[in-house]
Length: 149
Image (cartoon, rainbow, N blue to C red; front, side):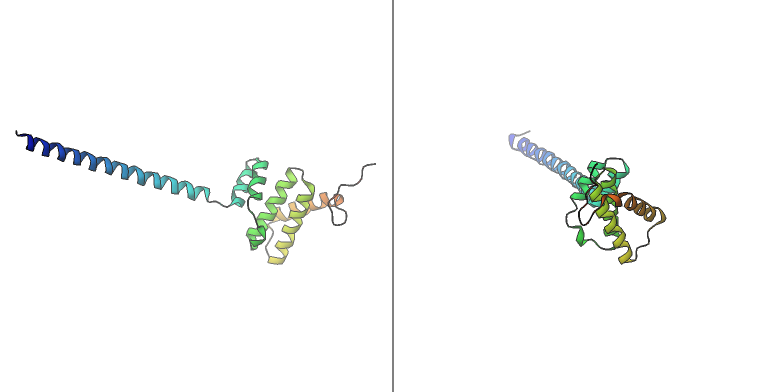
């Protein structure tokens, strides 16, 4: 075998190895793209949904963080707005933030009435129960506990 022919075989082998390597890299890149896009879809759940999941799991501080990250909730409409206000009020109530709980649950009730949202039996009763419980703590426009004697 002559040296020129040997070098051609080396170059051909090198090209085949590089093509195979680039194929593996492209395949891995595609796999990484699919994985990250799957994660993006998973994490693209709304802050409201993340808060509801955290609240159901008993992670109330995390739920509060998700709700606060929602930003401008006044842009929400209909049932999504009601769900946001109800969840925020319930989380605040469970964290013993009485003024926030009263504020958000009262707003949730008003949104439900205004939008014609049917309060499911449990949510309607729960809102009314909590608002009645917190009503003695409300005076005027501020949410202040009664003076201690």
